[in-house]
Length: 214
Image (cartoon, rainbow, N blue to C red; front, side, top):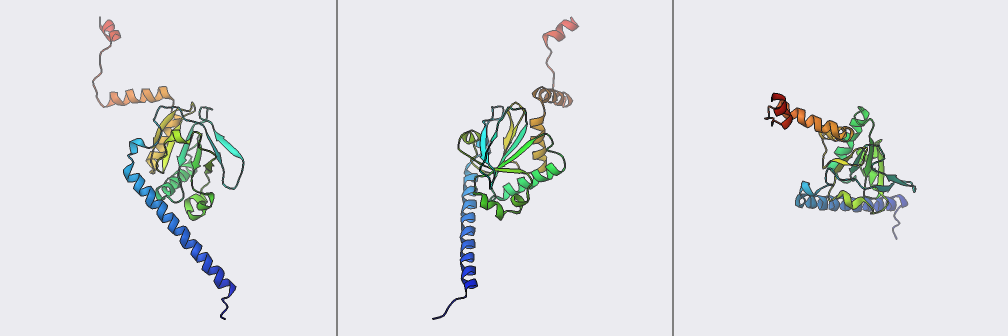
């Protein structure tokens, strides 16, 4: 009887396990791609201007349940991402670069994944990120964010109002989202009015104007 050395047997099972994981990842990516092509971006993410729901989550390797409480005065960027998603890896890298450049100062940034924590090891971007990573501790609140595909970035202001939401991945988009949740609502309105004035759009005369010209 031929006896197979122990190290060859271990290597054989390790190879089979790696191939199995690769097949799972490929099918998950195919499923996300098919779902993305049938899901319009308008249906992805919560409505802008609505109140964000609180979320509970657990960090990988820990058991303590943590909580994200919109409206506690802390603006936040919440990214729904997964390690098996190439676009998610791009978003995580961009968020890391923005943080290193000081572009996320004053913001709480949270990456929420649905994959098992072990999947973090298959992605360099997720394995090396310094951003907080969590996995939802339960379904409460998650449904209101309408995460039908990933990545999804949601910008919340200090009052817990959703200022922006969408499948963004580019640095300019991330900067815009960061500014959106830091800028007060009144200032946002003023900026819109000023922009309209500089573009030469006609200004309608008000009753106060008529009295002044009176």
